Length: 98
Image 1 (tube, rainbow, N blue to C red):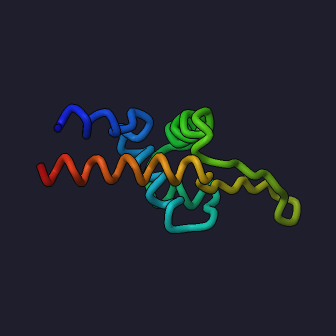
Image 2: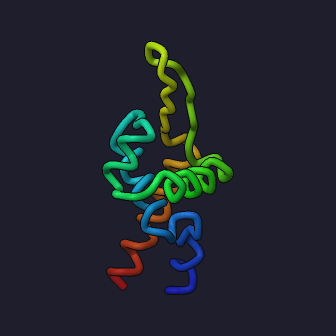
């Protein structure tokens, strides 16, 4: 039983920062880089590397635009990302309740 549950634990969400990014994006349509950095309390480089890992799995979508003359990067969870994250959370809940 536990073996089956563990198969649904997604390694992409193992790290607390990735877990945090996805948690934030699940309840917000989109969030910009500075807001993610502020909410998670991480450095630019640390956040960027975790965002890149989630983007490579197609779990998040990155939208770059200009607000006035300043560049602004927005992040949102993709449908695939939301489904994978829900499956991961369900597996964690089942594991806890075993």
